[in-house]
Length: 272
Image (cartoon, rainbow, N blue to C red; front, top):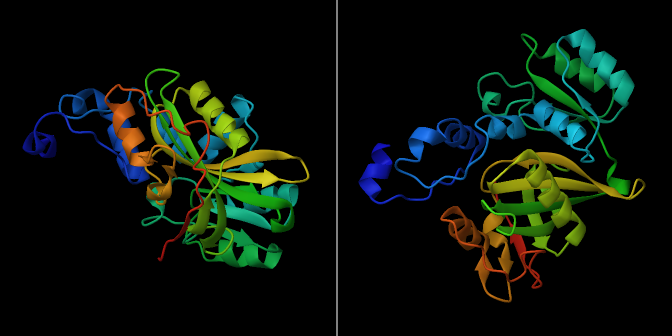
């Protein structure tokens, strides 16, 4: 509140991590006295940022997603592994626990039972983790979507891109990608956000399954994406940040390529 007062007027508050997204959403009633914020259900940001709750929302609203479970004990970890099979993916369920009570240092691909046993043995107590089905690289293509949704249905813009490299390899944050129009992923992103009542900025990871021939929503970040600055519609020089600003203050984002990503190809590399 002091920051808002010192800036003056009603500045736009944009979350750059999950902790900030949850803070802004759950305290929006008071914070709107000083900041411009989208109207969303108070707990929605927390639900979307929490892996098992995101999976529950996807199942509830018919959005394709990888099979996943949250084990409550080491024994349940191996029961889930037997169901999903190897390789499998292990993630911290709640991102804000990654520094204080991490189950893994970052998203991890576990190749076999021995690797899983080593991981479980390293835990001093049972952490909050989610075990997720792994879609093999040979049948999967990774995509990114950066979206911004306003108060009205026509106030939206979604940029999409192909994710080529990440850190840790094949399971972490984007380090190399390019913008590429994908109408199907735009529709999936828009459909999910409409169904759950999400407004504001978001950053999604989608994985295309070439066997099942559909996209799986694997991650939803209710915040500004780390590579969102590279999303730009070439026809009107419409940056993602500009669309975000206009929609937050109640204007419709510039039309441009709002139903897809940029037509110009851009390459970016993020160093960590």
